[in-house]
Image (cartoon, rainbow, N blue to C red):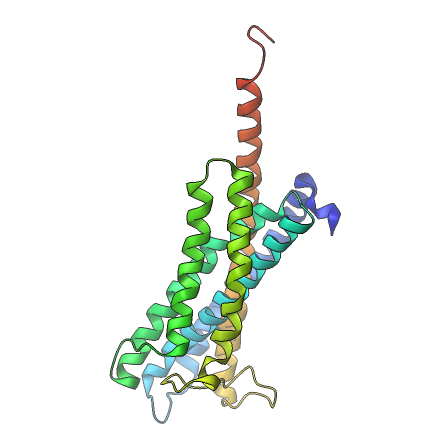
Length: 244
C-alpha cells in the first residue's frame, strides 16, 4: 500500500476508478430508490412511513463506517507518517458529518409517527449525536490551527479517542433500555427483516458506499492539488529576490 501514498500514483488510480464508481453509483441509486419507494410493500405496523428506513438505516451505517475510515487514516498518519493519510482523514470527515446529520434528521422524522416524539435522550440517539460532534470537532481542529501538520496530528488524536463511541452506538440498544429497535440486518444469526424490504435496504447501502467512493476520490484529488499549490506558494515566498 505504500506505493499508493505517492500523490501521482494515487491520482492515476483515482482516475481509473472514478468512471466505474460513478456508473455504479447511478445504477445503484436508481435501483435502490425505485425498490424503496415503488416496489417494496408498506409495513404491516408502520405503513408507508417505513420507507424512511431505506434512507435512515444506510446513512447510520455509513456514519459509523466513515468514522472508522477516518480513524484508520489518522492512525496511519500518526504511526507511519503516510504522505496522504492526513489528507484522507480530512477528505472523509465532511462526508461522515453529512451522513450522520442525515441519519439524525431522518431518524427524527421516522421517530415522530413511531414513538410520538422527534427525540429522546436514549443511548443510541445520544451516542450518534456525539458522533456528529466528533466529526465537527475534527474539522474544527483542522481549521483552528494554522500549521497543517500540527492541526492534522491534533485532529488525528481526537479521531482515535472518539473510536470508543462506535461500539457504544452499535450495542447501546442491548446495553440500555431504549425506544430504538434492535439490529435486524447485521446479526450473527442473520437478518430478521423480510426479503422484500431487505433488498432495497441493501441497494441503498451499496449506493451510499458508491457515493462515498466517488466523492472521497474527488476530495482527495482536490486536497492533493491544494497541497501542491500551498507548497508552490511557500516556495515562491522564500525564493531569493530577482531569482528566475
